[in-house]
Structure formats: structure tokens, C-alpha cells
Image 1 (cartoon, rainbow, N blue to C red):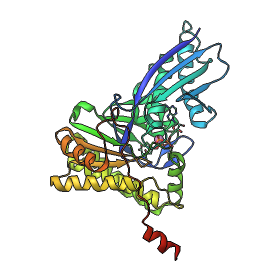
Image 2: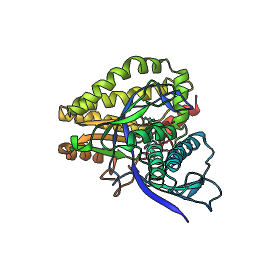
Image 3: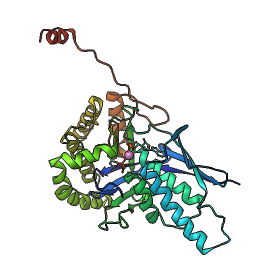
Image 4: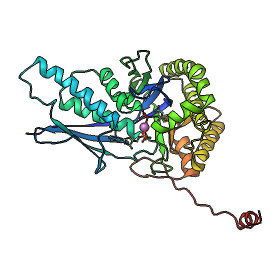
Length: 356
Ligand code: ADP
Ligand code: DP6
Ligand code: CO
């Protein structure tokens, strides 16, 4: 007898970045963060969770490959979900005993994994939701966000659509470090996102590793979490509630820039952006300059891929310029990548370098 449940979860791209843990074991962040959840028609994780008395071990299959299940984060998620199911089974003896059975998770991302497009967010959100459905848990998205956070911090925000805040909380056990919805997607229906897939390669430094190097070595990071983020959090929330695109856009770009500056300020430095990423920043700047207003905002997670937020009425202007300069960006299904031209070093430089 196999019990089974399937679900999908969307990606969310932060506009105020989570970068830093105050408690790595519980995955508690050093600061509040804000994100926009993207449509599941584009980027999503599809996950099936099943359990059976015949299964002999927990298993996770990601994009067709079996993954290690001994990692602390996954273990914590399984433990929490089982505890919630145990509570139900203890109070109702007619329920099938699923909590003690081994779990099999089969998951697929329809976009690059570990490339800075929030695969850990969609991935753990889908995993938590799939098991919660399998166990018929009655917990609210907010309660489930506390579990998802322990899998991957950014995952707690993917349990909601629209505009989402992860409130860092103050409790040492993490019981108030959870996601809340700031506004639904309907609140600002004109909002659009374009994704420039600069590279689908797995990043060299995972988010988990990178942020701890920053926490321990970057002086700029201290300034960021103590003075910059608290003020920016309030301003960004207000800009979303007011549907004030220029303010939202400027805060988003400034925050992406500062996050990548703390990466560069880490020792050894961490580089997530590449030349094409920087070229896309320039294009967005040029678009805004030509429009005489801030109509587009770039942001980069921990990877080179650019996400550009804009409003529907400016789609032709924004996508037109991006397409003309950077390549084909008409939509995920149609064009998966931006053409980047390979440029060989001029012979003149080669001889100068050879001559010292
Ligand atoms: P990203 O920028 O894509 O979020 P991270 O470094 O934060 O990159 O996390 C990537 C890791 O997240 C993967 O190596 C894998 O362990 C985990 N992950 C990604 N997708 C899934 C999924 N669908 N189910 C479970 N875990 C996933
Ligand atoms: C740059 O949530 O992937 O995307 O909690 O260690 O799994 P872990 O990290 P993760 O970090 C996301 C960092 C970011 C910013 C953000 O999503 O807020
Ligand atoms: Co991630």
C-alpha cells in the first residue's frame, strides 16, 4: 500500500536579500528579507512524496538522480513533518500510521538547479507542501514556512504568491522566524519579471557556504544588517503597498548591488556576477535613462542570472532593449538562454602580455 501526493511550488526572487545566518543549525537569518513569487507557468518545481510500509529507507530523487538524504537540513524537515503527523495519529487512532513509514521524494525543476535562480526555494517549498499534503496536515502556510525555512531559508517565502516578507524573528528556537504575505499578486497585477539566463551552470560557491564567509569576514556586511536593511525593509514594504514602482525599483537595484558588494568584501572574495551580468545592469540603466524614469529594475541572486522587474505597460520598451542588446528574452519556454558572444583577446594584447 503506497500513499502519494504531488504538488508544484514556484520560485521567488528576493528584492531585499537574505544573506547571512545568525544560527546556521536552525537556519535563522541575520536580517528580514522581501521577495516576489514568480508565476508557476514559468519556473517551478514538481514534487511527488510517497510513503509505504515496504520502503526501507528515506530517498530523495532530484532531476532523475538520487541525492544524499543525510544532510542536516533535509533531516530536520523530515523530522518536523513526521512530528506533526504523529500528533494527528496520536489524537485519532483511525488514521493510517504514516509517520513511521519511510518517505520517497521525487522532484524535478524545470529550470537550472543551483544557478542562482532560487532552486532551493522552489525545491524545499515543494517538498514541504508535498509531504504536508501526503500527511493531510492542517497547518497554515505560515506554520509550514517555519519548516521550509529549515530546509532552505528562501524556501519559506515560496509558500505564498505575490509579495512576501521573511520576518527574521527574535526567538532563539526560531519559532517566530517565518514568512508572511505583504500583498497578493492581484494587488499589483501590472508587475512582470524577465529572466536573462546568462548561465545555467551550477555555481562554484553555494548560497549556504557563501553567506557564512560573508558573515565572518565582511565589515560592510555588519553595516548592511544593522543600519541599511532595517530601514530598507520598511521602505520597500511601503513601496509595494503603494504600488510605487520607481521607489520599489531603486530599492531593489540598490539592494542587489549591496548584496554583491558584501560578496566582494568577503575574504576570500566571492564573485557571482560576470561580464554579461554587468552588461545587463548597463542596459537597464540605459533603458531608465532613455525613458526619463525608473521603469525597470535588475536584481541578481547568488549567481550571474539577471531578473528584471518592470510594469506591463513598459514591456515593449524594456524587452525590446534587452532583446536588441543582449539577445533573445521573449519568455522562458521560447528562448532559454541569452546569446553571449565569445571574444578572443586581441593579438596585440597577447604579444604585450608575452613581453611582460
Ligand atoms: P539556488 O540559487 O538554485 O537556490 P542554492 O545553492 O541555494 O542554489 O541551492 C541549490 C541546492 O538546493 C541544490 O544543490 C539542492 O541540494 C537543493 N535543491 C534544488 N532543487 C531542489 C529540489 N527540487 N528538491 C530538493 N532540493 C533541491
Ligand atoms: C541570494 O535560501 O539559498 O538568493 O538558507 O543556505 O539554503 P540557504 O540559502 P538560500 O539563500 C538565498 C540567498 C539569495 C537571497 C534571497 O533569496 O533572499
Ligand atoms: Co538557494
